[in-house]
Amino acid sequence: MTPLERWVEEQAALTKPDKVYWCDGSEEEAHRLIESGMKEERVAGRPVFYELNHATFPNSYLHRSHPTDVARTEHLTFVCHPDRETAGANNNWMDPEEAKEKMRKLSDGCMRGRTMYVLPYMMGHPDSPYSKACIQLTDVSYVAISMRIMTRMTKDVVGKIGQRGDFVKGLHSIGDFDPNKRFIMHFPDEHFVWSIGSGYGGNALLGKKCFALRIASWIGLKEGWLAEHMVIMGIQDPAGHVTYVTAALPSACGKTNLAMLESALPGYKIWTIGDDIAWLNVGLDGRLWAINPETGFFGVAPGTSMKTNPNMMRTLKKGIFYPTLFTNTALNIDTNEPWWEGMDGQAPDNAADWQGNKWDASSGAKAAHPNSRFTASVYQCPTLSPEFDNPKGVPISAVIFGGKRTHVKPLVVEGMNWQNNVFLGSRMGSETTAAATHQEGVMRRDPMAMLPFCGYNMADYFGHWLKIGKRLIHPPRVFSVNWFRTDEKGRYLWPGFGENIRVLKWIIDRVNSRVGAKETPIGLVPHLKDFSLDGLNISKESLEKLFDVDADEWRKEAGDIEEFYKKFGARIPKEIWTELHSLKAKLGMSQ
Ligand code: GTP
Ligand code: SPV
Ligand code: MN
Picture (cartoon, rainbow, N blue to C red):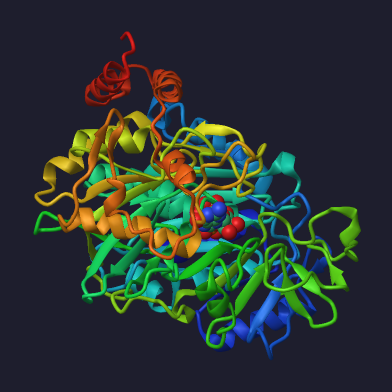
């Protein structure tokens, strides 16, 4: 028996499924699992899948989750290092032995009456030196089908693991969906994630946030690389030159939209490599190289339309080899198509809401859940980069950090040098969204968009970023962006979406030394003459407001950043304090 077989057997002995089934990742198998998910298998008393209109949305299916299970649950997510300090103030912590004891009790017999699916998958291209062989166990076909879309799932992975015991392990069960018995536990030293009680996205697709960010960030700290919550894309200019950039924005703050943006400026084109996760390595050439370990999009449905994100709408209608899943969207009963708020056209007259109840538009209730999502293969994306399957990845010339800030932060700012760049990333903040269960619209600090995903002490993470910089001979330039600043009436000042290319153009113009910039206390901002505004209907007043750096607002911001750092005590690197002190001095604040 191989270590893998032994591990699967042990987990089956604990969870007691009726059947253990090893997936091979084939198309035929996916059809079979979807069939049984429609006919036999039940989740919360309901079919796992409903077939949608295949004439307009080929190979697409609707999934409705348990009503309490609609988003990541950060308060139930734990990182179990042997000591609390390693986990840091950014993580919930539990002693690993105590956590396992708790999980063993909750998991005893949890798969009774269900099938245990064994999912062998790769994060990253199998030929990439950066990829990882993984196994997830789950008791729901929705997760098995989602993982086949999101990762490279094939039976070859079993052979690749062979006699090794150090493969990445995930044990997942939906349990009985009781939120009081829901936990997502990480054991970084064992490359092991144990999740029970949720079937939703980042709580259940364990290759994604749990492994590719929380555990991988810890492996990256040990091995000298970075696992980041970032888009990867190529920006082609009118001369045909492609500049690769990554962008970190918090959950539901615009990564998927940015990753496949349709340019509002003629001659520019975006090539998509990833929309959520980037693994960054220092190449032998001293540049930063990025791969996307995933192969699918798990994207926010509301707000997605031909106007905002035409390339995603096209992607969603291309499901053939891979199915396309819709989770917690509404259903147009007359056409059997998915529907959500912000989609093109009129709201349907006859719709079922995300729970399957008849929707009454006049009630004011949303038909689709605000965190309803689609799951689609990247291979269906019309802007997929020809470099997507390159095992080496792509060389990165710029890194962008963003957040949702209705106030304070300008449209774009550039950092000055690596130390200042790490400070710029570490001081990001964002208003909370529906991607996790908590109050929406509350400002919280979210360094590098990694607050919920950094699998160790965030102060050490800043130190790791500083160290990586020392190994880069050609470091990327670093920028912060904010599409979400509002006027006094609460309206967005910036049109966003396809118009964001104007900001990207300035960024690649900076990278290619085509334009200068203006120094402010918080970094470099564009000279308006260099910022392309052709064809854009925006008032001079709005523009000024978009680029405004208000010293009073920033003094308050600096205080808030300081309060955040203090939670990490003496572990915050001195370089970061130096930068904060320098910012405070520039703002005329006492130290
Ligand atoms: P996760 O999948 O949770 O990591 O989210 P994400 O960062 O990929 O966010 P996504 O692109 O799905 O966008 C989230 C929401 O923000 C959607 O409702 C979008 O329509 C909206 N959005 C995206 N880009 C912009 C923009 O430039 N301006 C404005 N105003 N809204 C945007
Ligand atoms: C996010 O919340 O950042 C997502 C969705 O990308 S989830 O997979 O649920 O983490
Ligand atoms: Mn995300």
